[in-house]
Length: 199
Image (tube, rainbow, N blue to C red; front, side, top):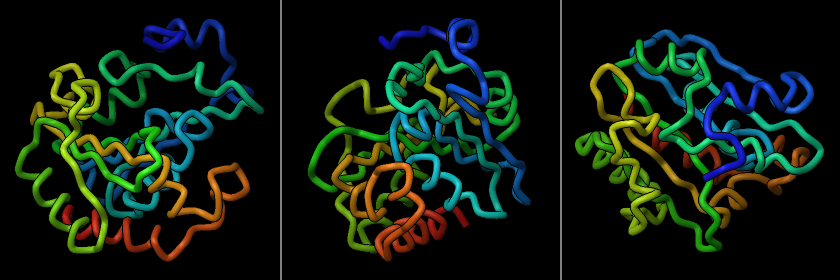
């Protein structure tokens, strides 16, 4: 459990524009939304990855920690994440893919969520592109709870991608704020693999 149980609690104690920011846009295919609920400094690299996957085609949302330090305190667990603009985008979309950060050193993508068919497509595309894909052992990473953000779209099922710290470090020059502005060729390969599975 994080410091805040919901967005109302967070909003009463943290200031938008100083401690956090919200970015979103509606894509050409508004039936698919790519979400980074723990972006910015909370789980570094996730919002940049989500935005690149969305491109101009899919809708995009990111809740980003922008404090100098202590951004982890802004983490609201996925089963409780209820920022209003995010919920509006998610609840009006057929497909929801959430991008998260996991703390392991090995470069692994953990694929979870209730949409088994889409999970298989994304997993196959990532493996074909040379990435290591695993099914999460931990229940907290499986994304199977009906209240999980990825499962709150119209279909009631989505995909949750947990990217290890080891993998995210390969996608950027570094996971610092400046380092995340420079992507590697591995970043492009990762994004293209997922986009190919969604098209």
